[in-house]
Image 1 (cartoon, rainbow, N blue to C red):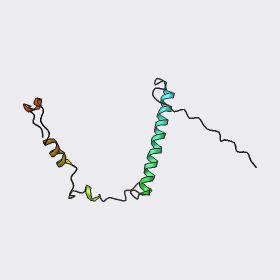
Image 2: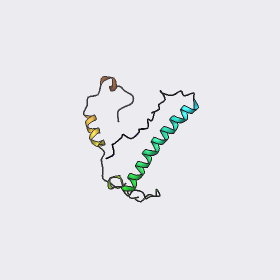
Image 3: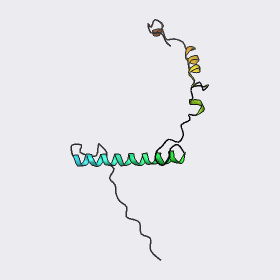
Image 4: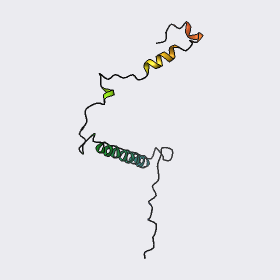
Length: 105
């Protein structure tokens, strides 16, 4: 029976602007590469998710062009503006605002 040995771990130094000498081009390039690599991982993850959901194909072409019902021009929707207007209009107006040349909407 083989004894299990822990796999060697690669220690990756997480860089930040506070941890590097920004005047040193090599350190700044390393930080930039680290940030871009992290961004690429996120972009690939998002791309895979959009493919899984059927939003785009493998080439990045948009598959769904129809808007959800609540986002269409003819949609009957209220984002709470009327409710907010009613709630604000019932509040007392501070004295400093009563002679305001710029009235509330």
